Amino acid sequence: MPELPETETIARDLHAAIRGAQITAVVVPRPDVLRGTDSVGLGAALTGATITAVGRRAKSVVLTLDRWRVVVPPRFTGALRIGAATDDPYDA
Image 1 (tube, rainbow, N blue to C red):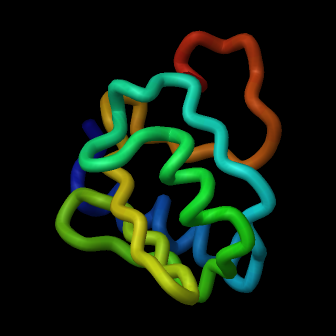
Image 2: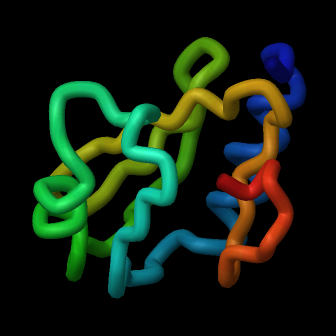
Image 3: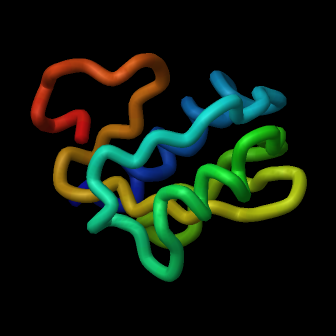
Protein backbone atom coordinates (compact mmCIF):
# COMPACT_ATOMS: atom_id res chain seq x y z
CA MET A 1 0.00 0.00 0.00
CA PRO A 2 1.41 3.40 -0.89
CA GLU A 3 2.28 5.82 1.85
CA LEU A 4 0.83 9.32 2.21
CA PRO A 5 3.28 11.15 -0.13
CA GLU A 6 2.63 8.65 -2.93
CA THR A 7 -1.12 8.97 -2.46
CA GLU A 8 -0.82 12.76 -2.66
CA THR A 9 1.12 12.43 -5.92
CA ILE A 10 -1.50 10.07 -7.36
CA ALA A 11 -4.30 12.49 -6.43
CA ARG A 12 -2.52 15.54 -7.89
CA ASP A 13 -1.67 13.75 -11.14
CA LEU A 14 -5.22 12.48 -11.54
CA HIS A 15 -6.65 15.92 -10.77
CA ALA A 16 -4.59 17.44 -13.57
CA ALA A 17 -5.47 14.64 -16.00
CA ILE A 18 -9.20 14.02 -15.45
CA ARG A 19 -10.75 17.10 -13.82
CA GLY A 20 -13.77 18.11 -15.89
CA ALA A 21 -14.09 14.71 -17.59
CA GLN A 22 -17.42 12.94 -17.78
CA ILE A 23 -17.77 9.29 -16.80
CA THR A 24 -19.10 7.36 -19.79
CA ALA A 25 -19.05 3.83 -18.35
CA VAL A 26 -18.11 1.94 -15.20
CA VAL A 27 -16.53 -1.51 -15.39
CA VAL A 28 -15.69 -3.37 -12.20
CA PRO A 29 -13.64 -6.46 -13.08
CA ARG A 30 -13.45 -7.54 -9.43
CA PRO A 31 -16.74 -6.88 -7.62
CA ASP A 32 -15.18 -8.01 -4.31
CA VAL A 33 -13.56 -4.56 -4.06
CA LEU A 34 -16.91 -2.78 -3.71
CA ARG A 35 -18.49 -1.97 -0.37
CA GLY A 36 -22.13 -1.07 0.04
CA THR A 37 -23.18 -1.45 -3.60
CA ASP A 38 -22.92 -3.75 -6.58
CA SER A 39 -21.26 -3.03 -9.92
CA VAL A 40 -24.59 -2.47 -11.71
CA GLY A 41 -25.75 0.03 -9.10
CA LEU A 42 -22.40 1.79 -9.12
CA GLY A 43 -22.39 2.02 -12.91
CA ALA A 44 -25.91 3.42 -13.00
CA ALA A 45 -25.12 5.99 -10.32
CA LEU A 46 -21.84 7.21 -11.81
CA THR A 47 -22.42 7.11 -15.58
CA GLY A 48 -22.84 10.65 -16.85
CA ALA A 49 -21.30 12.27 -13.76
CA THR A 50 -18.60 14.91 -14.17
CA ILE A 51 -15.36 14.77 -12.18
CA THR A 52 -15.02 18.15 -10.48
CA ALA A 53 -11.92 17.44 -8.40
CA VAL A 54 -9.54 14.72 -7.28
CA GLY A 55 -7.96 14.90 -3.85
CA ARG A 56 -6.80 12.79 -0.98
CA ARG A 57 -8.12 11.91 2.45
CA ALA A 58 -5.56 10.02 4.52
CA LYS A 59 -4.24 7.25 2.23
CA SER A 60 -7.30 7.19 -0.04
CA VAL A 61 -7.91 9.04 -3.29
CA VAL A 62 -11.23 10.91 -3.38
CA LEU A 63 -12.94 11.61 -6.70
CA THR A 64 -15.41 14.45 -6.23
CA LEU A 65 -18.16 14.26 -8.82
CA ASP A 66 -20.97 16.69 -9.50
CA ARG A 67 -23.30 14.52 -7.41
CA TRP A 68 -21.18 11.98 -5.49
CA ARG A 69 -17.80 11.31 -3.94
CA VAL A 70 -15.98 8.09 -4.69
CA VAL A 71 -13.28 6.97 -2.26
CA VAL A 72 -10.59 4.73 -3.75
CA PRO A 73 -7.92 3.10 -1.59
CA PRO A 74 -4.98 2.52 -3.99
CA ARG A 75 -4.50 -1.06 -2.68
CA PHE A 76 -1.29 -3.02 -2.92
CA THR A 77 0.19 -1.74 -6.19
CA GLY A 78 -0.70 1.90 -5.53
CA ALA A 79 -1.70 2.44 -9.15
CA LEU A 80 -4.79 4.13 -10.53
CA ARG A 81 -4.61 4.03 -14.29
CA ILE A 82 -6.33 6.07 -16.96
CA GLY A 83 -7.28 4.30 -20.16
CA ALA A 84 -8.36 0.91 -21.40
CA ALA A 85 -7.78 -2.19 -19.33
CA THR A 86 -4.94 -4.49 -20.27
CA ASP A 87 -4.25 -8.20 -19.76
CA ASP A 88 -1.94 -7.35 -16.87
CA PRO A 89 -3.28 -9.21 -13.79
CA TYR A 90 -2.42 -6.16 -11.64
CA ASP A 91 -4.88 -3.98 -13.61
CA ALA A 92 -7.87 -5.83 -12.16
